[in-house]
Amino acid sequence: MLQDIFSDLQWRGLVYQTTNPESIGAWLRERSRVIYAGFDPTSSSLHVGNLMPLLMLRRFQRAGHRPLALVGGATGMIGDPSGKNAERNLLSADQLRANVAGIELQLRQYLEFSGSASARVVNNFDWISQFSVIDFLRDVGKHVTVNVMMAKDSVKNRLENEAGISYTEFSYMLLQAYDFVHLNRQFECEMQLGGSDQWGNITAGIDLARRLNGSHLQGMTCPLLTKADGSKMGKTETGTIWLCPQRTSPYQFYQYWFNTDDADVGKCLRFLTELSHDEIEALDRARESVPQERQSQRRLAESLTGFIHGPAGLAKAQQAAGILFGQEIADLNDDDLQQIFADVPSCTTPRNVFFESGLSLVDALVLSNLAKSKNEARRSISDGGVYVNNRRMDAVDLVLGREHLASESMLVLRKGKKNYALLRLI
RNA sequence: GGGGGGAUACCGAAGCGGCCAAACGGGACAGACUGUAAAUCUGUUGGAUUUAUCCUUCGCAGGUUCGAAUCCUGCUCCCCCCA
Image (cartoon, rainbow, N blue to C red):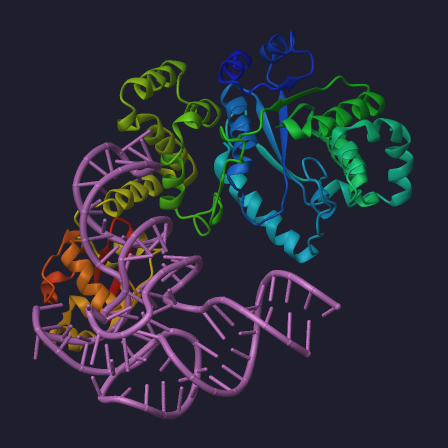
């Protein structure tokens, strides 16, 4: 059951460059194709920058094609010069192995591995490591002229740059080109996807496959996911937004998308969700008429968090969002609180003293570093800026006791809108 | 080497014997408003406290004085001009 995926991709603005733009839609409708996209093991987790190719593979899979996710265990040892203006540091073999393992695990989680269009994850180390230098130079290198390689943007930019390009990174393109040839032979893979910076590598693969296999392969690139101000999506002042919950909690992930600028959210909905055209257009209109409701951002955050962290992760993120934005905290247990406030600093106080004589709110604020001095703590309280379990406390002489606990052994202090601290009894 | 100017709180900057914990501006922190935005408005901005008071702070160390950020002596550092 093939769906017309190409016109959907065009509608979403996801088609940047393709081989044979006028016939590729028909080519895709003809029969189920095997389609590949590569993932660099530069880290042990995928990040927001990998979402585009990952989601592209999923879209093709849903439309009835078979996705092939390639982890660059071999190419990662070399370093892709595309889109980089400086030579990369080489990763150690151990580091790389760990990264490959982490990424494979994630890919398995996000693609479908059963049914007629079941996905496959491959590692190019498996075939590239089999090559001897002589074989590689004779069988692959002989078919590519340096003239063509130097004309590719990824190389040209670096030749013009005074930092130059090492022979190692210069060779990268040949490895990726050979991957396509190999996947074509072994899995009948006929199409490669990538970001717009991958066009040179993709076409190199297509050329090589024509010479070595006599086959006519296809390529397609997506636009890069950038914000209206030109900066990259998926980075914050505090760093990269990762897909693994250990590095970026589902809550942080949800918040990242929820805070998307109005100017960017329409593009994100098209690029990163599988919502219907009707729904996306309805959200566009809602953003015009009732921007304050932030429907688009909410839907985007829900869709992506649900996809990456599952329904349970989404529910936790939403619960955390509600609580961190002022909902009163009650009837929770230690585990829930710990989850929600995972990123919030905590402090401790002895249980027996707390139960016997209590702890003054002023002392608690100083203890938790929410206030630098008792004076400052008092000031904040009388300003109305201090909350316990999200309920405003305006009595300067308040003493905290058993009745203020939010769960078995914790209570939540807050100063101002967003400064939280967890107080735990030990 | 000679002459002149300066060092004040998070930053800039006023104060030049008591009314100085120190004007004003920025920043920061709260509150209101708002769309988890921006702008705006209000309050706070050395420490302790029973909010009245005490303690510490105006480059460093001494001194004069009932009283010093303010006057005197020495020291350290910075800037400018002349050689």
